[in-house]
Length: 118
Ligand code: AMP
Image (cartoon, rainbow, N blue to C red; front, side, top):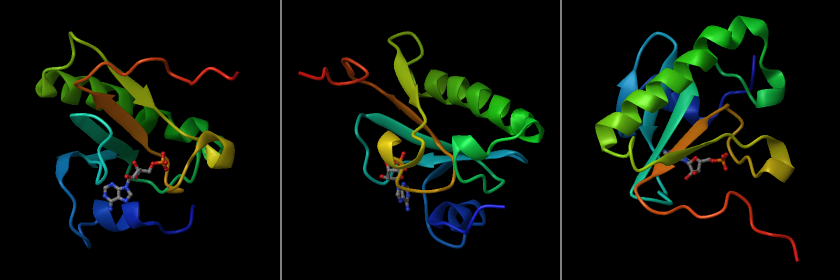
């Protein structure tokens, strides 16, 4: 089991967050520092630290993250215009919070996924 992070406290509603969806497997809440008009984090309720820590037993929660992402994108009105789902892993991936999370980002033109290296 991963070490406790701020996201664990959000799941248990011990600290405030703008939770937009929660069920037995996943929780979704608005990112505190949104990078686009829609920026929601979707996380497993189980504290999995990184993508490198997932196991087959986590597949129901990981699958649920995608179905919830699609549902929330439809509700936000960005399903047809498009959006990006993003999961960072460890240092080089830019991961800051070590509780696996999927970013749902949209509502504007997002441009290239990665900056070109010169
Ligand atoms: P990452 O760099 O992929 O680990 O992303 C971590 C994300 O968590 C960032 O986009 C932060 O803005 C977001 N974040 C950190 N603390 C909170 C919080 N208390 N409530 C909502 N979002 C948060």
